[in-house]
Image (cartoon, rainbow, N blue to C red; front, top):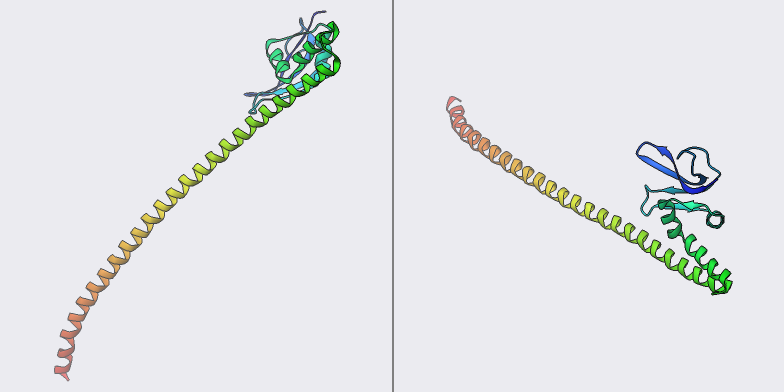
Length: 184
């Protein structure tokens, strides 16, 4: 029974999630499998890979062949490097302590790269948010300035209207007042 380490799809339409499984190569993609060894979520940035690395290494040593995508994921998580180092230990090129030390330093560097990318993405999001807020503040200032100008124009027009009404009313009032005095 030739075994493959591959992905099975789950999740909803246009929002796929995948399980990393060990399955018979003759079974369908989402069909029967031997063991589930992890999950993969390509919808996040960076993609989320939860993998039982010990089980994956065990299946690789037992002869299971990974698909291309799973091979890339195993390489990303360091499972293939660990297998390579263990082969060196078996051949006598390395001691187990040296292999563990090499793997630990590689793992630390990889975690630092991932953390750097996550921090960089978070910084970009924060910068974009600041830019949006600055643009919104600029638009709000322009609106407030336009509103202030309209209110000043309305006030000036109202003052001009009241001044014109006072001027007309003052002339009429002066003309009527002597007329009233003459009648008395």
